[in-house]
Length: 221
Image (spheres, rainbow, N blue to C red):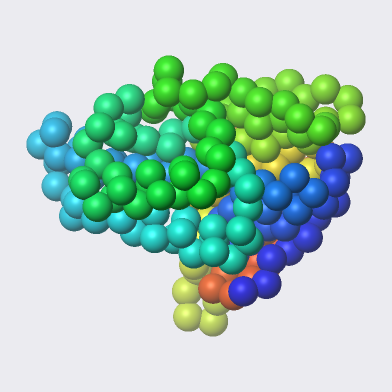
């Protein structure tokens, strides 16, 4: 798999086709919106989803940890679908996550789904990490999640919607990493409002990411 490099004030970052960012200078892997135990949360309210989302998400994360061997993982909120999600992890998945945490230092940012389970935000070396995008100081680059961005492109057979990154000189909006996370079109007002001067869409492919201007997203659909 081929990651797409981008350069910002805080350094060089690699946008991985799996939907994560690697920060080589800091040996940090950045992920957003794992939504672990979403299926069990919905089941408690009478909904029906196959209860395999946490395992699928953690297995995908394990592949990235082997690929990049980061010292740290920065999780940008909504890592669990609710505040009790960690407690509901099945024994095997809980053990897998514990092994990851033992091998790599996890920095948990809290989100709107898992409020109170981590830091409100974190800043270092010219980068700020938070769940929901906010004001960005001069010279900073912000990494956030929350909106689960996706973009739609036309193929010969039909249009295809895929998760994506959205970025400009000051922000990088990450796709949701969770197996059952869903997504919001990059043409939607909440995402457009974050990029008033335009930006780049990095669509996730199987082996690479595909970049095109945010302004072309509507045309691509």
